[in-house]
Length: 632
Image 1 (cartoon, rainbow, N blue to C red):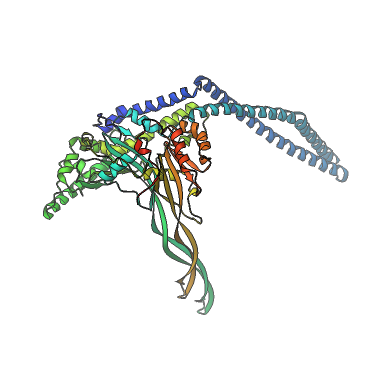
Image 2 (cartoon, one colour):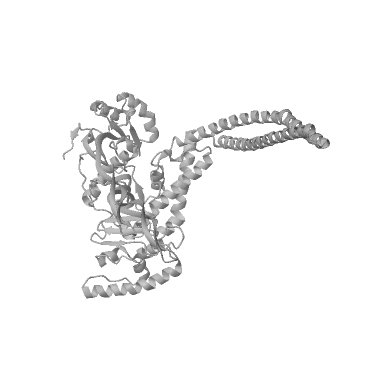
């Protein structure tokens, strides 16, 4: 676990606005500047290269415009020459066969002049100018490409130093209360699972895409994103046009038979797997251990006048709820701060004493500032809060679409370090703001920071080296084609299970759960306006669950992305080419697809020891046991 930090955040909105927002921004800028210096790129020279590139690109665009003008003029001259030629032929025809000799002569003469002039301008001037422009254009294109390569090569020297944990490290260094871990390790997993009943992650319908663990004064939190599935329904539609005879009267009282056409629409509702994503924060604390409640947004999108109206209306409802509680003999007692009671709206709480223990006057004020966004810095009332005894769950709208993966390769192609610097700093700032305001409902409660967790006796050894959550994150980093079963026609849910513990690696089973599809056509009887029932064909799909299990080796590389890259080739050569199999590095963790005829296990363990530093003296001897099957 991360070391406890005594620094407190007693007024999260004010402290973000006046302190931490700027500190994290400065930390991001400093981190980027350090990477530039480490890369050896001369920033002044790079900026000159960028200036030259942008100047050459601008000049290239100008020449392209001139070239387009030349093409337009060339087309105009060709059309003019054709017109002149046609006029000359017409004039000659009139001169030879017409009655107007003068008219024919004039028309032919003008046509010949236009034709000759057009061709002279085209071949003696325009083509020569076009050749010069094309040559200059080729030179500029070559120059632009060369300058672009110089600029992008310099940028890549910096981005090659990027690592997965940079934003987390920046936050950890500049906001000491929020201690973010490099990995969600087995000790914290054991602590949260046994002390706080985290759960064992066995739900086959849910897979973890991202996990970030940390602590606030020793109290642990997890920031997670999962993909989940459930069997819902889908409505299928089919149509058929039917024609039938109808008797209609004419204007003279006689009846005739006419044919009418009507569309028939039939629907079928059938089971269909649905998929979704959830992003949430889980925070554990011993304070108020019996308290449960839920709250959802109440004033989201409301202006000040609408909020006042809402509070007045809900205050009346609050008193009615309190009166009903007295009659039923329950202990719901409203606080005197009606703004807080109505806006926070945790009326289903089960313990008044513990609720008041958490929500002191300062906690109420902090929470209202957060929800109302009174200083224009938070996301306002966009979060749900569920407390289930020790566990606190926060789900916010702002975190749903946040890029939380921190991939070093997310930056794409840049030619300017100044542009990259701005985007990098903006990304870190956005990442920090989102995480901070997911934690803000927790930080708004002072006792949570004053309450340190009780001592916990950790197990001396575990049945696996790494958590199943981290295993799933690694598995989901691979292309899904790596694991999905043949015939898969839907999304895939990956579940992992460690089956063997090596010296410093786990053998992990990855089971890919998905569905194959069979297509059907069903005739649905539908009545037409004439009362006759017709069968309407409806195409629908039937889903059958399928799965496939693959094995991967998972290990901690104990270093940065740069360390891993520098050792990857040698490591591959020493393990019979393990890294020639599909593999994935992420947040210091390495997963390698395990073939059925896998490499010698002892050789793999020895290579991991050697290349990733596990043979150091300080390494705990308990982690150097031989392979053993995990007890089921």
